[in-house]
Amino acid sequence: MISFDHRILSEYRIKIAKIETLAKSILTHREPKGKEAKEASEFLDVLINETDNFYQNNSTILSQNGKRPHARSRLPETKEWIDNVEKFYEKNPRRRPRK
Image (cartoon, rainbow, N blue to C red; front, top):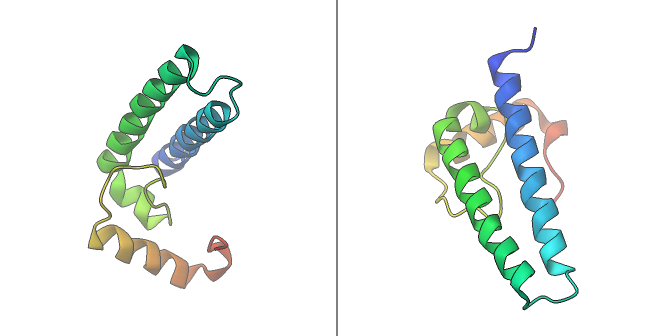
């Protein structure tokens, strides 16, 4: 049986992958100033807002499992999140992402 924590982590991973895929396609679009690219970047803003809300609602579970807000996120990092992430990496040094 899949735990609630695992479901949240998996959903967050999927949301981040969607953001990365869309951002990459916008950057490599043949007409970066065209209508398609502008509408795609508006949709990217919607995805980022949705991911930020998801992170805010499930911040304790995500930060306790070493997940920070995405790099494109508009959320300010709180001291609680940073402390939770650092505690996670102290317990699990091999899972620390490369810089």
